[in-house]
Amino acid sequence: MRKSGLAVAVLLLTTTFCSSSKADEVQYSLSGVFGSSVNDAPLSGPNGAYSMTFSLAQTPTPDYFDVSTGNFAVYSVPVSYTFQCDGCAAPVQFTGFLDDVDFATTAIGGMLAVELVTDDGHDYYWEFWGDQLFSGTVDQPTLLQCGPYNLLDSGRFELDDAPFVQVGNATLTAQTVSTPEPSSVTLLLAALASIGSIAWIKTRRA
Image (cartoon, rainbow, N blue to C red):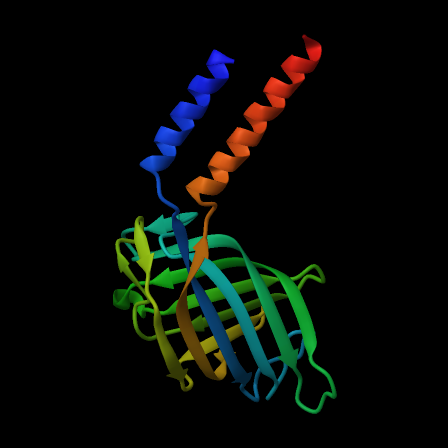
């Protein structure tokens, strides 16, 4: 019982000096209408409308970066994607992962590139130029809240191994979203419950 009491005291002291924290993310919304030269596929087609939403930690740890070229990438990013082909009655929904999201400094064009490889073997690739979407360095970036950007023919699109074509007009918005993490009080209650369970088990055994 003395050990249990000491553990509770330590937990209470720790909680006094700890506060709840939040993990900030940046949510990206990208939508547009493909140009007339975009090839047909389940998630793309000429004059079809598309939109995607994905989020990244505001201070991500890059899976890849190149200081010499001025870019970094984050792999396996959850995405929600919708495509409405020209003349179709209903849109196609896709929920999965982007293979990578690549950010560039203004020295090499700025903005970002997005790659989506689906299970049916199609490789969709968007690339947009413009403002730099992060501060800091490519090995320790901080993503910025920005937009909306009206991207008028300032990007290109590639389907599989086909040549790059103009992607058409698009809109990009990046909004900061705060995601609450478990507060210290919640952690304390969980710890107390565990200690209580241990004490109860010892009492039953005795």
